[in-house]
Image (cartoon, rainbow over all chains, first blue to last red; front, side, top):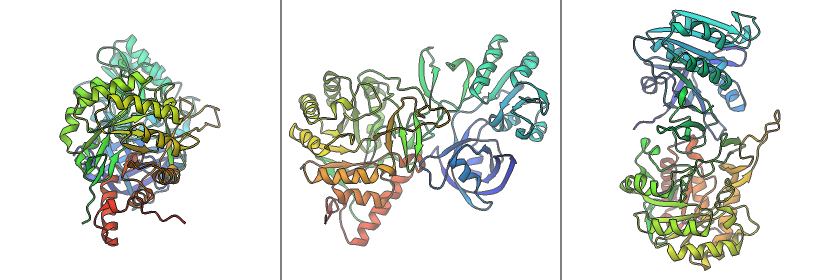
Length: 251
Length: 303
């Protein structure tokens, strides 16, 4: 069977920035299948829907997720204690395609940064461009440094790293890279996609939408994309996505 | 081991659990969890004469003990269903119910006629979708319109015909009676209750369609009440649904008057819910010394 639900033990929990939690979950049978850019669909006690959370990293034994408290569900999830179990359906969705031998820029904005880590790990030559609101929101910089040839950090207010946006940095480095992979707020993705198009650089984007089943059956997480004949369709972020070629997305 | 087999309008189901339309697509995704024969049947995603793109997102919002959805009948159209999905579905050893929605009498009749010449086991008339401008619920909210659409489709429908009722009505009992009087073979109920959530920071409804259909445990008591009332008033079988999440809910809905059950929203959190509900039902029946699940139906003893 392709899908599996697992009651997995939380083995590490840390608040790495205000309201942002770093969980390591022991679930070998799921972790070994995880690909860059896929997500985990996590059940939260007392809530009707699972929470889709991108996979930040994976080993043979563990999945790592980094998530932000956005509402009651993620608040409850954040209160899970080490040793307790988490009901997890993973790995789901279509992830990043990381070709061999290429130099790839991994661009993350805010809580879109975590899924870029496992993706960057898979690349032969990774450059990370990470954008945050301010110094206090900066996460995972050291993790990226350990797997990337170069890491740029930008903050909106200039309180840390480069004062500016990920798009500003990408403009400077785009001629050095073969491909761009990105996750973050939609306006950022849209701007990145435009820059890539101008430079004829392939770009993959990871989209987000309110989700139901997580496997493509309930059809709620629709986004406008182009089908193979170039017609606009509603495809589903949980199954055809979350990662799309930027040219497929109707912004 | 009790016997979980049930019969609705002459069609035999291996157990009373049917996947509810709109929550299960055309079955392929859930077949990656377990064989679809785990279910008594599948009510397929609502289909229309022509393909429909559905509503813009967001299409879902969580609510206390439930969800609102407004997918807007996104589907590939009846011909695509018959050609691409039905042959595969028919190999899954479970009852296949085609759920159809339309803009006009003509749409419903054409689809019923088309599907009557296929291998679908039953047809479920969706006259209760609250999430499209035209296409369903306008046929489902008065005795006259339900009677008229049932009568019209009946002429073209050679399969057992299920009428799926909306709870967003003044008197669901008389509507069910109208469907029965015009030749419905069974009733399925309830579709979702219309609802709304608003983002207090933006003033915008969370769902792009503004309103959506409420489902999940929040609606279960409403569904039980309505199934009970309708079961007292009609002689055709009822497929009960609305928030069933546990085997206890399943037993309760059967006792209220349902012959078979549909489950939907619970699958999003627990894809294995059908396995657990069947197991729980079986143990419950054994503990009560009841040999067949059919013996539970309408055993309610109202005060």
